[in-house]
Length: 430
Image 1 (cartoon, rainbow, N blue to C red):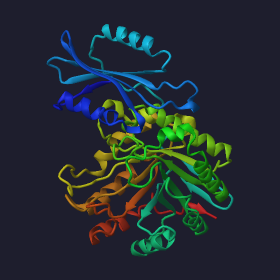
Image 2: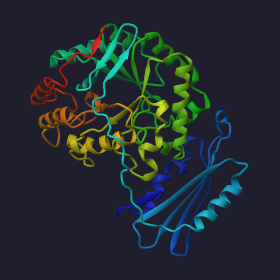
Image 3: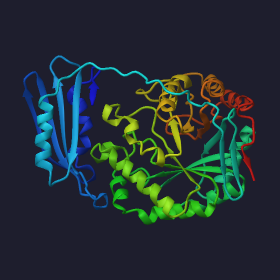
Image 4: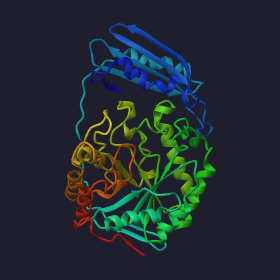
């Protein structure tokens, strides 16, 4: 990885990148740490191991990282390799030999010529009683609404009464500490709606619950099977979103917590996907969903390093919030700058996948929320045709005033936006 520092101290980059290693997160043991000078470069090395995962067959659980810091350059070159215990010494020696011949070079990227990406994607998902259909020239609005577990439909109807709009797609969250939310889910589908079920691998709020290696090991197979059984029993289309925002260090499924090894995230995803298929939960639609901003924003935490492969992903999710200025460290961001870049990037990388904004919202503090909402509706109608679903996060989150009706002006802008022909349609037939 070529990490431009942009004024960040290289010590800060190296320290934060390896903070969880040094803390022994997820059973990691640092075997060696070295800081030395070689010619015109400063070299910072780490060697570590983690508990072996038997289900992988040949598990490469020994790691060697070299950070090369050239003099008078605002850059760090980070090299990471992994191997198994048996081949550790030979592999590390070969790694050092390769690096001894490394010469930095300027390079650039340009977008390769590709066939035109289809904009007018039509969505058709059918279950036993419900059919979800989104024509090519339409985008469906969904919602996550504040509610008491077990009474989601009641809370949703209150929100809908406030807006005068029925949301046909509803999103929710569950952690590994809770069972499959059968009551809420069955009531929503009985009411003629489709759900996006978000499953977070932790006990809510506990950053020490680093479950990704355990999922790979098979420790949670029975729990995952219970989810597959619940979804299969439903017999209707279900959007299944596992471990979203994996490129954020606020989530213990970020690779930062388990040795920066994205392969473990991918193996966990594949195991869940395989269990669902084996259990017959073919009505589950897998949604892969990074955050639009990586934290830490380092090359080794690029969201696409977490992509498990086309055969394991049905939809690609986008998430970017306008947090406003409720906190000193954040800023007001308009809808276009949040989504234009990732829309083009994800459309190019995943041209066969429909896009969904899985959750987003705007704060009231720091700008004109009503104008933000108006702009979002206009851009979704005109500039982002591959986004087939957009889900509003309709809940206060800390200081962030996200609800649609946080002000009369915001509420009016949202209601008016829903009248556009792109959004004014019925997607579900029973």
